Image (cartoon, rainbow, N blue to C red; front, side, top):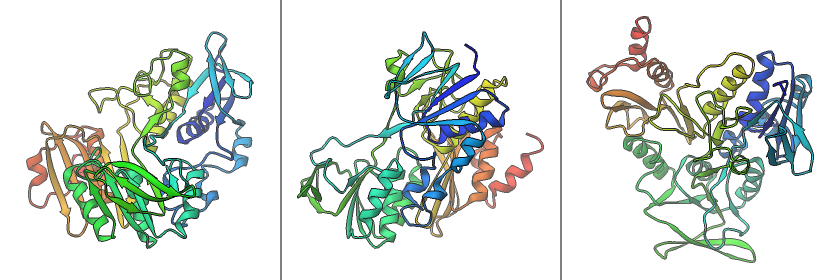
Length: 412
C-alpha cells in the first residue's frame, strides 16, 4: 500500500501539527486523526497557567476551530487504538473498527506518573495533564484555602504560583534539594526558590509523600515521610510522566524510554513513525538518545515528519528549547544543560532578570534566560550554529549576548 492514507494516533500538539503540516506540504491523500478526548485538539501548556487563572477560555485553547479540519479534509475520530496489525497495515480501534494505513504515525504522548501512596484516589487529588484535570481543579480553587503540591518541577511550581496568586496557602513537597533540579542550573533554581518564598509558597526539600488522608471520600491532609501532617483542601501531583508506548510495545516495535526512532523519526517498522513526548530519538545535542516533553519538540518533529512523508527527508536536528511562566517570572531555556561544568551569569539576580550561560568543556551548550527574552533568542541562534564562545569572553565586563550574536552572525 502507498502512503496515500496516513493515520495518526494521538491528537495532542504533535498529532495535530503533523496533520496540519501534511496539508501545508501539499499532501492530497487521506488523513485520519485519532484522539481519546472529546472536541478538537487543544493546547496543553496554558492549562497550568493562564487557563487556571481564568485569563483564557476553552475556545482560546483550540489549535484550530472545528471547521478547519473539515476544510482541510482531516477526519477526526474520538476513540483509542488497541492494536496494530502490521502485516495487513491496519490499526485496530477499541470500537472494533479497523483502519487501513499507508503510513502510521504514533503521537501518543505521555501520562502522569501517579504517586503510589494510600489515598491517591480521594476527591480533591489531581494530576494536571488534560482539560478535564484542569476543569476539575479549577472548580476546587474557588473554595480552597490550602493546597499541597507533590514535586517541585515545572508543572507543580506553575500550579503553586497560580494558587498562591489566588490567596491559597501552598506547600510543596520535593525529594531533592532545589526546584526544577533536573532541568536547571543551581543559580536559576535559586532565583525560583526565592521567588516562591516571596509569594508565600513553602517548599519542603528532602521530603517524601507517605500518605494522603481524607474524610468522606475527600482529601483533608497529607502525611510526609518525616511523619509531619499538613492539612489541605486539595493535592496536585507533578512527579514526571510515563510515555504511552504500550501500543508500540504490543506491536513489538523497539521501546526504550519511549518508542525508539531513528534520525528520520522512523520506528523499527518502516511504515510507522513516532513523534512528540513518546519518541526516543538521536539528537546532535545529546550524546545519547533523548525523549523530550516540550511544545517545540512536538512541533518541529511533526514538521520534519510531514516533510519526509511528502518527499523532503532530512535528519531531525532541531535545537531543543523550553519555557515556563511562574508569577512574574518567564524562564526560557535554549539547549540542553546536562553535564555542564561551568556557568556565567549575566544580568541582575536581585532584579530577577538574568541569563545563565551553561558551558561543558568550554563549549556553550545551554542558556537559561529569566525575563530576558532577547538573550533567549540570541542564545538559540548561537547554539544552533555552534558559534564559539568561551566562559572568559562571556564573563568579561560589559558582555552583551544579543550584541555578540549579531556581531558573529555574518561570519558564522
